Length: 243
Ligand SMILES: Nc1ncnc2c1ncn2[C@@H]1O[C@H](COP(=O)(O)OP(=O)(O)OP(=O)(O)O)[C@@H](O)[C@H]1O
Image 1 (cartoon, rainbow, N blue to C red):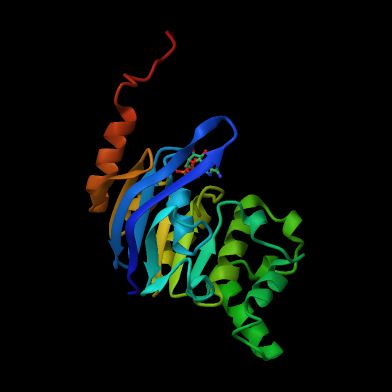
Image 2: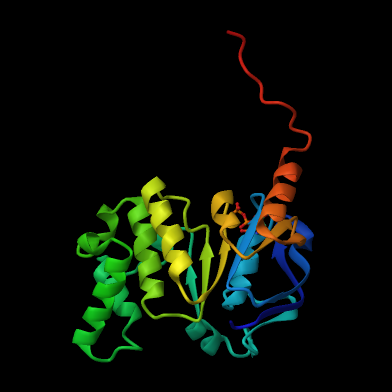
């Protein structure tokens, strides 16, 4: 597996409403060599920020991130060839009128020959069970269908590392199961943020992010248990209306 290394990484951004930069991530040190790594945590804790550092979509304010020895700032083009990124919102990723065209667009660099490109696109669409939707307008697809289409476009080029930002948010039970099986069968390294704790339990290692820091890093069951107890602290028992 490629090694994804975070060395003393911090991310801070200037905002309009404060003179001091807002810290999104701080003191992140990680060596990721496992095949499947989950990233969980509360809304706004910094999960997407952490994932975006892996393919250079965000640059660290201090520290470095490397993928297989390549710095995500200095070697960003190489890193982006090796790291496929699937966004939470598929419409921020799908740019062509239909899914088939989008998948073929992804393949234009790796498959120069048009008929090979079509064959490879067919194979990945088939694998994700969405071949029958390939020629429909992206805007006619449901949110979940689009989410699978965006995954197909990234998977088609066979990246070494696959980064997925909440890939199951829009999926129904059947497609969520299809996603779980697809991820389980993939050879590449997967780094995935999710609010779906069952999906997190399928991983080899899980990071819990809390207020921009790695608050727990370890076995999935322990990570999920720690996260649950932090989330529920202070909430008390659920309120029920009197019958
Ligand atoms: N460019 C920016 N400027 C100011 N604040 C930002 C910027 N980008 C992200 N943030 C803030 O950083 C924090 C972390 O955001 P991030 O998207 O990483 O959270 P997340 O854990 O992925 O959340 P969610 O589960 O809701 O998707 C949030 O409070 C967000 O508002």
